[in-house]
Length: 232
Image 1 (cartoon, rainbow, N blue to C red):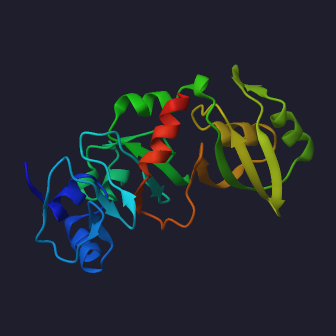
Image 2 (cartoon, rainbow, N blue to C red):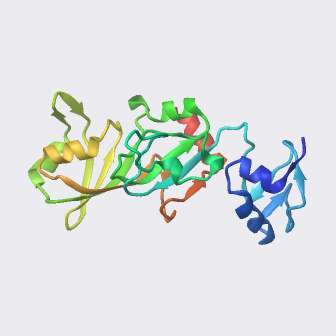
Image 3 (cartoon, rainbow, N blue to C red):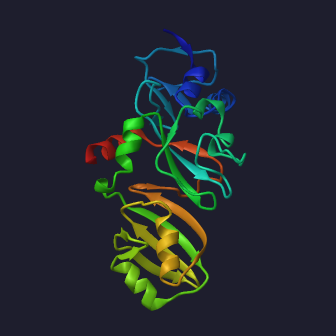
């Protein structure tokens, strides 16, 4: 079935129709290798559509996105307390995406989202051993406590794997974990005398947040998605 190019781009989750039309006018969109500059084009599932040279996938294919979660936003579809959720920050075309794990209300940074629920589940399994990296601003640096966290500790009967922790500035830590238990970084650092004041995730596996603006979402290239899927 033929679909207008701007609608196709929107349904793929790459951009809203309005932004898609702006991309087309700017010469950033190509169909089967031919750059177009007018939205009066139609495509089918057999056509290859690219934006800035990156192929965008059709709606029935697995898609993975990175979202820059703002502060004081809930990672949930609905909040009984009426607080703002990640879906309040996203356009209607992203409403059906599943979030991969959670970032708590006060944690900012990289949150993965996908149209594939099974992929979301596999990415968060402890057995996947996918590293997540955070920048934590703490109230104080307790060197002995950090050494304990580096070797793995038990807090309230829950065992936490060893963390890779580097001091990168005054009261700032770079923390890498591979398990992803609920509130893991906050709980462990608080228990070793380094309570967290700010927490920001910068990477999940090979995917880095980079300079993506707060509140924005960006589709991850299919090659990267395919490579991740092969490791699971």
